[in-house]
Length: 152
Image (cartoon, rainbow, N blue to C red):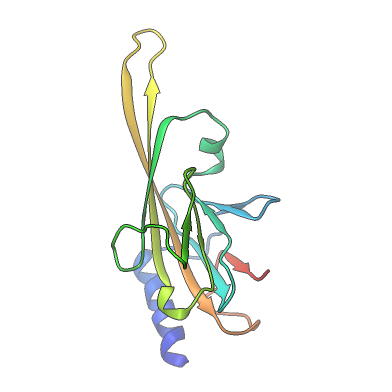
């Protein structure tokens, strides 16, 4: 157990997340990212993760043209839907029955088009969102403090 806590602290240090709270949680329980700031959260083992949204609240409030989403898991391979991973067409991710081996960095890249009104010129915009997710065995407080504790 101590090794796991130490590993978590080292990973936070290496990603440079510091102490800030960098996510936005909506009334529906969706977790939005913030560009350039990893969102840290713990999920109780054998529970579903919150729904992670591949965008920030500012982006969610505006219309996006032809959005695409690419989720990459802790093994640095693109994620696809399966019995543990649920990815929607709108870029939302939920990990079912969360286990310790699923802990790590989940990254999503949102790509969409913008159109210049005067020239009708299209430009592709890409934005990356990082979520550090760790399994949590109990209701005890954890140090360093994560951005979000999620317990249904």
